[in-house]
Image (cartoon, rainbow, N blue to C red; front, side, top):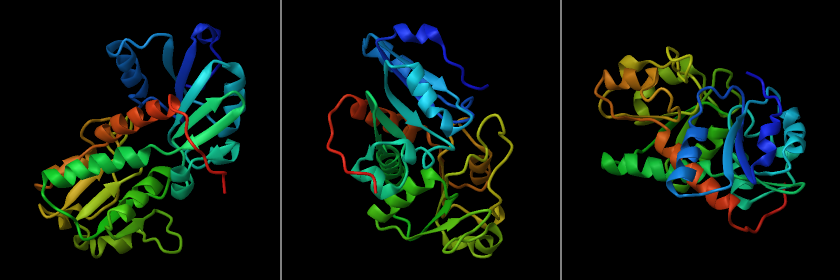
Amino acid sequence: MHWQPDPNLHSIPKLYGLIGYPLSHSFSRKYFSEKFTREHITGCQYELFPIESIDRLPELLAAYPNLQGLNVTIPYKQQVIPFLSSLDEGAAAVGAVNVIKVEGTILKGYNSDVFGFQSSLHSFLQEHNTQPERALILGTGGAAKAVRFVLQLLNIPFSTVSREPQEGQMGYEEVNAHIEQFPLIINTTPLGMAPKVDSCPDLAYDKLGPGHLLYDLVYNPEITEFMKRGLSRGIPVKNGLEMLYGQAEKAWEIWNTPAVLTEKK
């Protein structure tokens, strides 16, 4: 479904939303709607804006002068940066944006994925009382940038896998030859996301065992094919729902707190 302006949203005092394409998998509207009800937050509404091209962002902004903030998801976390007035220090360091604060014509970019992923990964590692010596990141998009940033903060060495590897990256065939060497494997790709729930990264799962940990940033479905293949081999797994909640709360904080920004590099 493509986005079309909805005049009924003009009467909302404070409008928030999510841009990306497609958005049928997203729980963000449900999360914020429940938050507004639970915390008695009035005059606010959160909507999904499935724009099929990032070039439609100015049209979206013009259609809703009451827009206060946006979340950004696949495939626009990097594509959106040229449209922004400035980035905060964290987003500039990561090189990806998943939160936009709208102040009139000024668009300020942030990254709350770092907070969400770091807190979620910390609880996962604590739960299993481990600090992996190496990690494998599947995918190279905006979410992967946040994951790389967190692993660097935690001093966990990592390698990156891509279906079309660039310099410094590995292909799946190459990594499968010695996948046993990566005790933590993190899927940042949309493979397995609803509605295409039968897909998963092309890994040599038969080489994995209980000494591994699998973390999937996908949260819909709750148990992805990637996670199922791990569970069948006795491997601890975790999905991205806790990360979603963490980054969403950080986004709400950003939208409602003045912040110092650095200029976009």
